[in-house]
Every structure is written in C-alpha cells, then in structure tokens.
Image 1: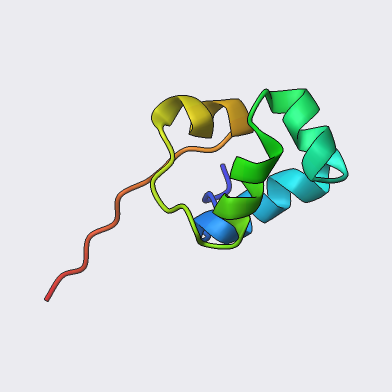
Image 2: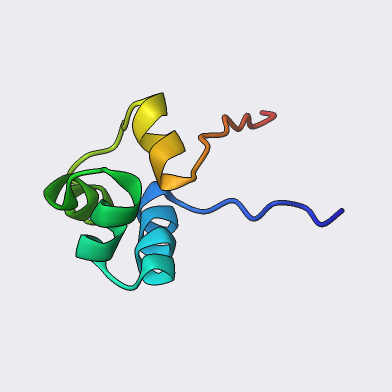
Length: 67
C-alpha cells in the first residue's frame, strides 16, 4: 500500500478545488462555503473543523519531531 502524501492545508484544499474544477464547483460538491474555501487556500483560516475537513475529503494528521 502506498504511503499517503502529507501536504499543507493550503495545498490540500487547492488539490480538492482542482479536482472539482473550481471553488464554486467545490462548494456545490461539498457544501462548504466558497469564501471559506478561498480563505483556507490562502492561509487566512488554519483550523477548519473536523466536519469541514470531512466534507472536503481531507483528514488532519498530527506529526511529531524527535529532538
């Protein structure tokens, strides 16, 4: 099984928007407001709810660094 690719929230949302063909189409497909999607892509919102992530088909994954 291939290892999942980890990306920033902005890049993940951008990929979802590209998959749907635009912000408005993503809003129609997911029910997430297009202005909120834009704010996520531009880094103006950084902590979407679990429900929003699920609607967009995303999952947050915590990472830890060994010091």
